[in-house]
Amino acid sequence: MMNDDRRTFLKKGGILGVAGITGVSGCLGDDEDVPDGDPVPEVELLTLAESVDPFRFDYGNWIADELEDDLGIPMELNPAESAQYGDLVTAVENDWDLVVRRSGAGFDPLNTMLRQYFHSEFGQGGLNWWNYSNSEIDDLLDEQREAEGDRRVEIAHEVNELLNEDMAAAPVLTQDRAMPINTDRYDNWTDQVEHGLGSFFNYFEMEPTDDEYATLEATNIEQAHSLNPFDDFGRFPRTLKGLVYDKLIRVEPPENDWVPWAAEEVEIVELDRIDVTLREGMTFTDGEEVTADDVQFTVDTALESAPQVGNRWEQLDEIEVHNDYEFTIHLEADSAEPLIWDALDNTFIVPEHVWSDVDNIIDHEEDPPIGSGPFEVTAWERGEQIELDARDDYQVRGGPNIDGILHVDSSDLRAGERRVRQGEVSQMENELSIDDVERFEEEHPEIEISRVAMISNHWLGFDHGHSPFAGDDEVRRALRHAVAHTIPKQEIISGVYGGLAEPNSQHVSTEFDQWRSPNAEEISKDVDYARGLLEDAGYEWDGDGNLYFPADYDA
Image (cartoon, rainbow, N blue to C red; front, side, top):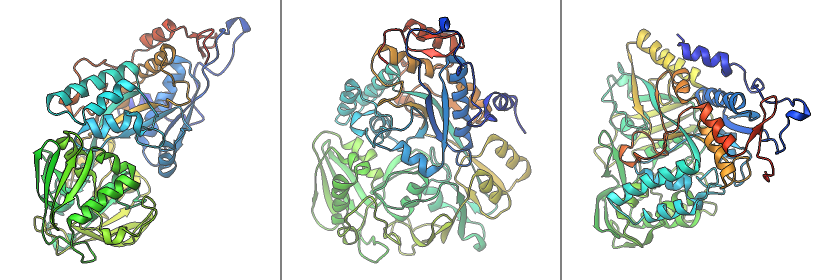
């Protein structure tokens, strides 16, 4: 079934494809209609290919259409496959002007979203994909690393307000995840905010209703390109790594508080000191025991060679190892609580005796991976499937209730959804469309739909390096604000996501109420307001509606 907003979208832009984006711009009128300023050049909008993520492909197409129709900005849509998209997003120099981006992980958004995505330290190939720089925001995000309690919340509010004033990136929405699971086959399944059925605790706690289902067969359209524990890119690879490797703590639903995991005890002794005791008897899959030396080696290696993980440990002074199981984390600042949420929850423990001889840490791939988590990789056909067996000797909470996992790669959402409907697999960890949700509910009573909000954010990001949006003057800032106020959020939510999303005007998820400022600017579609911003900044249009920079402005 298709709702009216979806039909409107398809008529307006969705079926036009890449070459079909047309609008009022593109042709020059008579000479007397041409303004004196430079024309705003063609803007490339990077998004994911339709086969990878039809939702973001659709609304990227829609936004491009609106910007061309309503503002007169010539647009080119670049839909990329997963690997190419990842390379383009993380390049040192961006080869795009706008990007449709969804990202965010972890339950401390000051570090895992605001700091990593907007601090200038993480630009030029880091997680600050848009190469944004603002010294005032940098200072606040550095301060919060040593702050606690109410002051950290105040900083989050201030940063959200400043990001909106500067329009560093345009927040779009917070998405809900709707994922299918066959509840005739599994009891005690567990979903979690952000992760949905991809939650570590779902794999760990679910119980098969029959021995036939002792091995969970599941599917995902995102391939596990790497299980390198120092490579932090990709949601599905992180999920698998969380099953194969252990962390000192884990964030447990439904309260989403951190609990000791590979650590038996984590104690904040002082704001700059954390005492940790490891569980005794934990082993890696090669039989070697997990010790405090492995933890120290993991952190030292991340700091030296793996910035995506090492940057989370910036406040570390030293790890003082007392014996095989006890160590103290000494910090350079009073930042114990933020470090637990950011670093301990995002660092996989690796065996020193395996990794100490590795030269190229980021590109190295153990085959099979040697971790201390509850599952071990027993077979891996890249691009096809990966098999994991539960470990009988796992020490924490008696280990998983299933015997193993067979994860089959699906080429796209349609293929994955079909596998669930036909009973080939029992769950899929990708988001369904509202049409698929309704079809499952009407035709497949054995399938239950997990619905959770994401803690990641959807943005329309601006390149702050070379694009027409780059610059801290009022002319460029007005252009960014105008674009943000042309995004049809409500129409996207209804027409693309079928209501499975919520509009967002800030740079943390709508799930994080306390971290969102009550004073931040609300950003909604208002084309008259957007064009007024451009006019006030001196922009002009020619007779065909093409947008021009102000006269005498050096574009």
